[in-house]
Length: 351
Image (cartoon, one colour):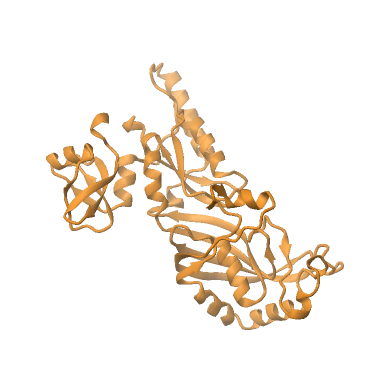
């Protein structure tokens, strides 16, 4: 099993859930033991890391890694889901307009249009708002998220008609850069704007952030700070930890790999082989690429493979214990003067 254990990095297409990708990978890798690290919404694309065989147990340690995204934020109105999938919410920006029933409000009020025009003439205001959302911040997750509330996913509660407001939590946004700003003209819909089209602002942004950061919450909060409303219209994950789009394969490429494997088995009349797509990285490679390395003596490697503790090293946080022959034996962490295992990749029982 260890020789088939590792990770596959997929460039997830739009329209598929992360679970859809897992199901496809189970067929391509001919195993039920497939899991993923870090859910992507169906509309989002980009890096989705899947663990294969024993690699599934490694996923919880990859989830905590930092992530990078390219995204598009639309300023002008909010939505019920903080992204383009939700219903538009006209931004209530003064007391007179707040007294109007939501259904009767124009999609973008005159005062919101004035603010948007001001932002176009003074884009430094957007920069100042962006800076408020950079660094160590408290972020209120989107109510349509996978966070559990009393045992149920928040999005399930929202879909059943409940109002869900999740408490803010600490996240780190290392980079929140605006790559491009442009206007877009959209159909005003049925919100009492007649047939008049309205102009909004689209921002193409790059975000580097800690695990647990919601990019659509950044879009929502940026719109709130600017007083115009905002939501996410596009999201592409470009990196998880040390793995990027350069490492990723499309599902079509993986299907081609499986087809070639089937053809090779037929041509060479091989028996006992199962045609499957190839790993992006073996479990050894994935671990040593993701964590600092501690080189283990033979006796230490044997002890660690059995889950035993050994003397601590000078490495901080989680690190990889690697044997003399280059195998990643375990992920480890110091506790005082001893080091304990947090995940044994090569247990003695499987060696």
